[in-house]
Image (cartoon, rainbow, N blue to C red; front, side, top):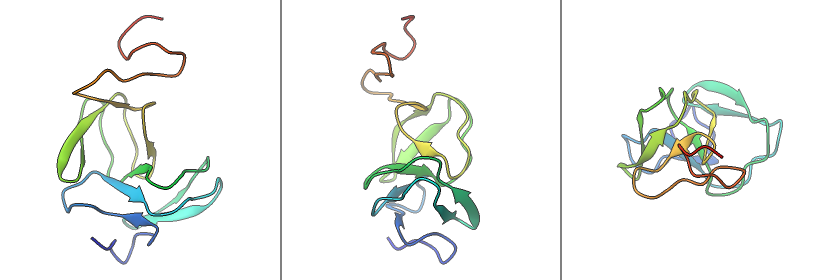
Length: 107
């Protein structure tokens, strides 16, 4: 599905109800991209296939990709933020965090 006119063409919306956009190509650290009308500066380089929040997500809110839930926000995620294991908890499989501990476990 093509992105809207006010979204960077390097971001792909897979389904109309999705809460994330998928990178169609690498975005370098410091680049500014438009996400549904909001200019967002990407703090670190993001590779093809990574996700950026299309909307603000509250902690515990379900995250949708392909029109289906892929997990829940483990903390608040702002529109335009990178969505990955640092702020997304799978509802289906254990989510590994940096440092090797599983989400919810005390390391």
